[in-house]
Amino acid sequence: MKVKALPQIDASAERFEFLAAPQHTGVRLDRFLAEQPEIAAAHLSRSRIKTLIEEGCATIADIAARDPAKKLAASDKVSLVVPPPAPAEPQGENIALNIVYEDSHLLVIDKPAGLVVHPASAHESGTLVHALIAHCGDSLSGVGGVKKPGIVHRIDKDTSGLLVVAKTDAAHHGLSRLFADHGRTLSLTREYLAFVWSVPERAHGTIEAPLGRHATQREKMAVVSPARGREAITHWEKVEDYGVASLLRCQLETGRTHQIRVHMAHVGHPLIGDKTYGAGFKTKVAKLSEKAREVVERLDRQALHAATLGFEHPITGEEMLFESDLPEDLAGLREALASV
Image 1 (cartoon, rainbow, N blue to C red):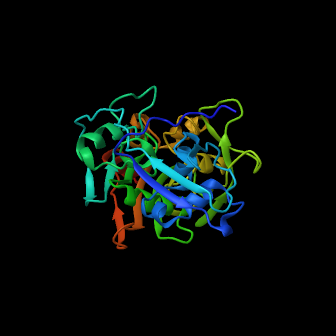
Image 2 (image 1 turned 135 degrees about the vertical axis):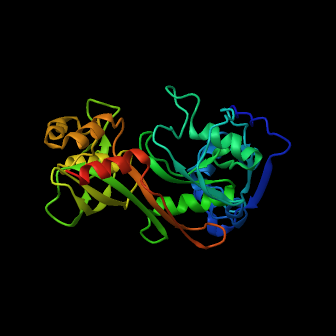
C-alpha cells in the first residue's frame, strides 16, 4: 500500500503529541484531538481540526491520517502539526472605518451601506477585509489558517450598522461560540431597525420559517421546506406606524443570509428599497406624500440598519452593548414617512 507523503511543514509550525489511552479505543481522531486541553488552549475549533487532518497534518504512529473519522486504538501515538497562518491574500487598503470600540482583542465597527464585508469575484478590492488588514496589521486573527481579520458575522453590503471583528485567535474562538449560539444560552443581542411596507396588525410577533437557496434564482434566498432549509427565527415589534409603511425592530435568534429581508417579505411586509425581495410593492410609493415619495425613490438600498449589538467580551467577560443611530439616508426616510 502506498502511503501519502506528509506535507512540507514550516519550522515555525506548532506540534502537539498525544498517546491514546484504553478509554479512547474506537474514538474518532478529530474528536480525540478536540478534547485535548492543549488543543483547546490553542483555540482550534473542531472544523479547523478536521481541515488539518484532511490536509495531512495529523499522524497516527508517524503515518499520515487524513480521515477525521479514523478510529483510534489504545496506545496509538497521535500528533498534530498546526502550520502558521498563511499571509493574507487581500492587501490592505486605506479605507476609512467608523470604529466605535477597540481594544487589543476586538473592535466594533459601524459599517456604512455600500461596503462589502468579504472579497468576492465581483468585489476583489475596497472591502471591509481590505480596510481591516490596513488598520490591524500583524494583530489580525489567524483562525482558519489564513491570516485575515477575524470576521465572525457579517451584514449585507447594502445594510448599515454594527459589526464586531476579532483581532486575536482567542477572541475569534469566543465570539464564534457566541454567534453559533445565537443568544439562546450565551450573551448576545442583535437588533435591527427595518422600514417595511404596510403596517402589521399586531404589536409584535415571531417568524419561524426555514431558509434556503431559491429553487431557480440561486442568488436569492427563500422560505423553503424544513428538509431543504435551515432553521430561521426572527422576532419583531412595531415601533412606528406611518399608515402605508412602518418601522419595526427585529431581533435575530438565528443568523441566516438575508434573513430579515426574506422573512418580512414572506409575511407581506418587505423592506422599503429592497429590489430583490420587495419589487412587487412599488405601487405603494404612489400612496406616499410627495416628499416621502422623493426620499424613497432616491433610496438606493434596502432600509435596514443593524442598530444594537450586545455581547459578553470573550476575554474579559465584560458585558458590552453598542447602539448606532440611523444613518443620514434612513433618518431622512424616517422624517419623510412621519410627515405623511
